[in-house]
Length: 218
Image (cartoon, rainbow, N blue to C red; front, side, top):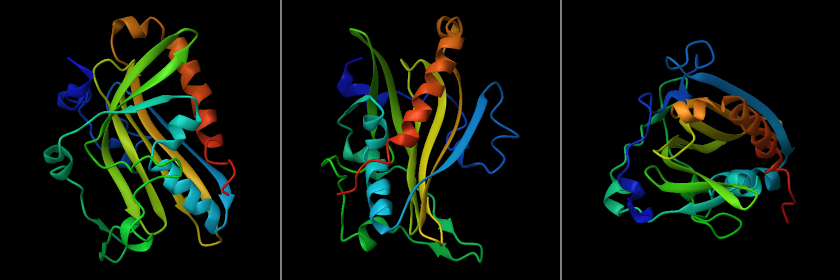
């Protein structure tokens, strides 16, 4: 299948949206290893605007050393992707906030268009002269006043099977935080043989993810 047909590939796991579950760490999808880490990445309005806009335009991945190739996806796919309504603790619907409260900003700091559910991309990890491909699809976005981000699910060809979410939020004191939640396992028997190396790579890139949003905000 050619690169332009990646959007036709299904994700390689069943629990789509599982990274939203409050009890993910206690009850992950069967056979998957859960992960969650939250870290403060800065403070103030400038850091908040930079962090969420960077996160929503693949900046976490790019700033961590990945090559990101966003593939062309038919509008019929992204337009019809289901995005559930969010509710606050009182049961009042929470409206999407990015376009209304950000002066219709739809691009990140480097000019990359913001992600939407259904968008497919190939992440590539440089390993010497080689690149390990990791195709994925955005399965949901979070677009609230003080909480924004997205999750992607793995496609065939990714070394792992599972889902990973990158959520930026702002607390009442102005602190800006990044939370990463995921569940994963090697995609097939060949990758199980390299499981220790996969775990090491996860640890290495997770550290980079948190550093990716702490750069200058000029």
